[in-house]
Image 1 (cartoon, rainbow, N blue to C red):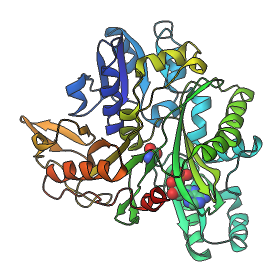
Image 2: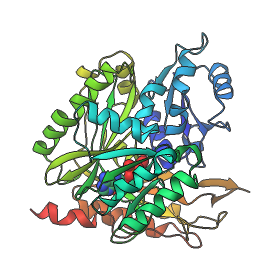
Image 3: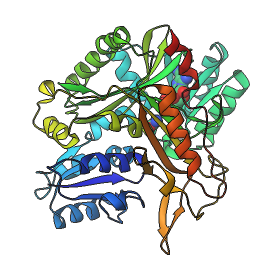
Length: 430
Ligand code: AMP
Ligand code: GLY
């Protein structure tokens, strides 16, 4: 069977790499892909918002499975579009329809859902420009820090942690009145700040049955010691030491089960990944957000730990047989380190020649993000450029291997964090 993956990051490279290992998967196409995905399949230079072009490609290349790596196409309704077409409806789509994608597409929708189904989350209220005065009044009595979020998709930049009332009102001005994110900030959610440690939990679900994937922790800040600006993700670790059986039981009982009940009651007809961003507050899981696709860079750490055939897992989703699927997981630790362009997440230069890949040991995985070929040379073409993943029996050993590989790969200005996993070490010693 031929598969089309939508996206162009290291996450999509990892999905392509994993699917390519399946005996059932004939050809893998990635739209638009990057220099790394070209090595595992064929890149299709298509704008992912252009559903007609994607549909035409799917027909021309006899695509039987569509794996939507990133959220925009899902929120824009690519699944509904494929299902609504006589020529495309046989294609197995991994990723929910628009109704389910709203869990990620609107923070207000997500919070309403969480509250309705009694799923632990931070207390909140939603405001618009018309209720700006009420929002200011609400902030006056709010505890600090306070969290202010643009309602719609804002590429991870729509969340402001305000330390005091003045900062909070500035953020509100920026989002609601200056429309910093356009329509995506026509509503804002103001919520209570949760003190704890974050973890990303993933399930694949048809809205009734589900398979739990390995969890991961990602490192969003640019600077070592979790300092500086937020990025798309600087690294990841899986498994996460504090996620023990007791914590996971609470996640299942208080978060996953009521989420599935909610999906059924709201008739979302969900089908795909659900990424549950959790805060562990003194051992209790609180939902920070849902995403309706896999995480990046978490995917680069969790897929290498999955021994089962990913294609078969997707088929089980389609056949409503996830309940019987026994996921085989490698117990070793996977450590992912992201190499980025100097200056990222602010201004950075592209087009730098990348060297040293031949020095990376064969057992370290290299997933491309912002890369492209230029006159036969591999060059950087984005902020996050390459993710390296190493597996080992301990977190220390996995990190040592991943860091050594990161050091070997180079270009002018490349940067990476040397301290991924730093906060998890004490937990391992307990
Ligand atoms: P989100 O886009 O909702 O995942 O928020 C982005 C990041 O902001 C999260 O990964 C957290 O690090 C932080 N964050 C969001 N909401 C809260 C909250 N209520 N309390 C503390 N941190 C939060
Ligand atoms: N790692 C966070 C995300 O993919 O949104």
